Image (cartoon, rainbow, N blue to C red; front, side):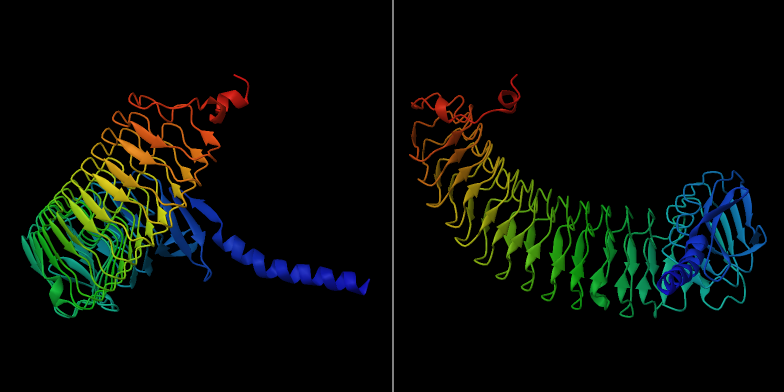
Length: 481
């Protein structure tokens, strides 16, 4: 009995501790507002569903003091034109009024001290932004919103029409989405006080041509920071940069020159995707990995110099780099991802280190100028579509320990005349050599166990023995169709 009572008391104690937290997070309604009770007993607005064009944020909801507006709470409110926030509100969450397409006027209170990522991102008509006198943290400088606490530029309104802007000296952070979508800016001048550039800081600033990043002390360029800056021609990174986040310069279609400092150790996925004017890339010496689609769509890239310590090339890293003719991979490369060089139609020569242990599906698919290839000795499987569409391929040497040739691995290799299949190969996938119109000689291993029914489809010059006993059973055969 004593043990039972003790157990019940523990359950009650647990519920007393957990239930208040659960109740605090439960949303409640008050007219057009949905809110939650925070741990200090005040309300945070998490959603507004009204249609007012001129709105004063209530200081209380159901008798509960409102101190915060949560992330994206008013996002895409197309009715709202004028907004006033009264004293009492302390916190304005990330992107709170994002894409309020008709919002023109905003008054922020003296009590507001905490502001997240640009709460007015995408507010294309915002022209009148006011901060009440006496605010200890927020201030305006020429209509641009700043935070004193962290030295952050929070919001440079999309409607500002300056062609050039110089950040105040002492600015430490260019905040997330700070210059989002401004179409007038052509030049931005920053000082060495700048330590960080947030995500989407200059996202789709279509007219931006110049920014002196090399004069700053930034260590990281945030995700999508310059994504869509289609007139930006040149970037020289400062010496302290160690990381360039995903999509940071994606779709910078005029970018012709990149100068990397030697201590960059990370470049994110799609960081320079579709930089179609970029002609030459020399990657920093300490870089060991290239992420997915990092340089995909760089159609003018002709020169690529890779660091000696590089061991990982991600999927699609150089996909559709149509002008790239020759690549020398460092001896340290161990992994080449799927579609890594897919669509590199000018690639005639690539040297793969013998120690490379993985080459992904479609890695060299549609490399229409590739003439020869020596596969690394550590390759045990040629993945599906690896050389599919390599219409100029005439010579390929397969590794002695190869065990499997995947589906469509050499599909439409029109010029391939002969190939020796190593003895350990047990499986040749369907359409593996389909449409190899010039193929006239092939040596098959004695231990071959499975062959796709159309593995040698349209190999019109090839005289093969009957392989029907080795055909892989199709899905239809398995279910009796």
